Length: 110
Image 1 (cartoon, rainbow, N blue to C red):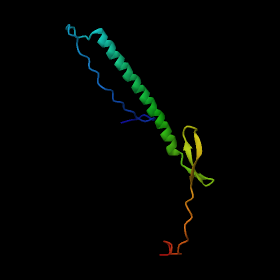
Image 2: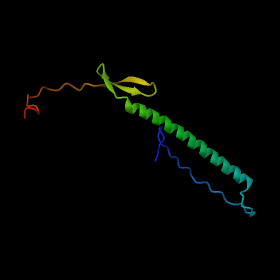
Image 3: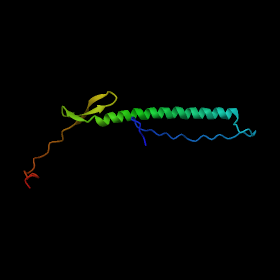
Image 4: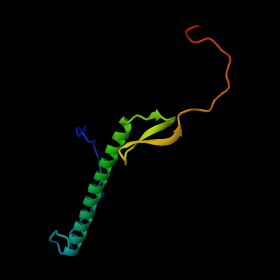
């Protein structure tokens, strides 16, 4: 269960296998150890970067989800998370004018 207020992130780190050295002491050769440590460092940096990006996207998505679009000057105004303000989408909120239909009964009159 996740109790983190900023959301929960999961990052799967690929397995790194360390084989024992042929000399029998159970430790890998120094050059192999260096390669493994370099791989581990790269994986840790990648995980940290991905966690940062996930948090950034979470904050933007959360902001957009609570900023309800509205109509102004006949167009939809939508939240722009980069500028942190509502902007004119250029999309008209008015449909095309249709033909008048026959007057009928409303749901309350039926």
